[in-house]
Image (cartoon, rainbow, N blue to C red):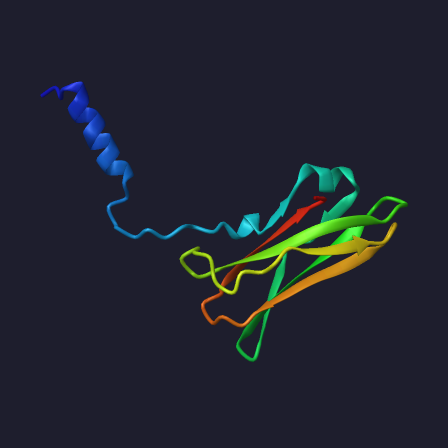
Length: 126
């Protein structure tokens, strides 16, 4: 039996929809650090954020390193997500930090929302 091309397309689309009805976004824990290319060009490297829990509050931190002989001003923001990958409030503000020449600095954020399960750190120079 041969299917009409439009029937084959409909079957393909139906198969791709997932069928579970779960609108969850998937957070890839391997992509927990997002850096603009300008940050790398400025000699900044960073560790992926580490998570710890203290009295029900989730804390994230990352160590930034500057390989250049001049200080670098970095803007950073932690984005918090629940188990389904949806944004968790309160939303963190963008902060600024100066990483010393040939040195290191630690960035940290705390989220007391019990729904917070994952974090992503974003770094930029602007």
